[in-house]
Length: 258
Image (cartoon, rainbow, N blue to C red; front, side, top):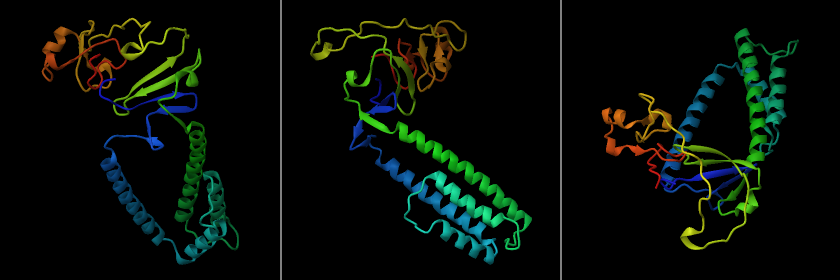
């Protein structure tokens, strides 16, 4: 912990995070969300204007035929369809527009080429959307961070932890073993019984063991400096640099090991 950031454990197909009213809680996020919504609305208007420009070049008889085909394939506007079903119906519409024969539409070679290209892109987008829909359904289970460990983990299980969704620290973890012990109360309820040896992190300038890191970095390997090289640095004073400590969070954000 360094700056009270949010974090998430992913164990199997379940996400464990701090939840507020059934969703992820971000302090003071309302203004940012409103700004994002306004940007999306502006983007939608621009997209509609582009579509109108493209549709304006389509001959009237083709517009009528497209409307008829759309009405036939999508008679119920409120019907919920999977991306794959939408792709299938649009494929039928495009196939009808492009099929040769006496009833073929008077398409120019350029328009026929554009429709064929659009059909290919649509198929790809819908297939990807279908795949993502399946992934999301398998990964959508969420639980609160207050879940007891015995309900979430077993010996030998692998899982991941992400700390801070801005300058994120990613951890891959595994339950090595479990032991029984006396449950202490108060400040000493949780105690460290084993710890890794601190890895040696080289100075980015000379390769000697680093002792500090420039603040604001995302990767310790890009910001680590030995004492001599740190004191030569002009952007940060040595006193303002972060100490390198035995933690995956070292050198990131404002973490000092406390």
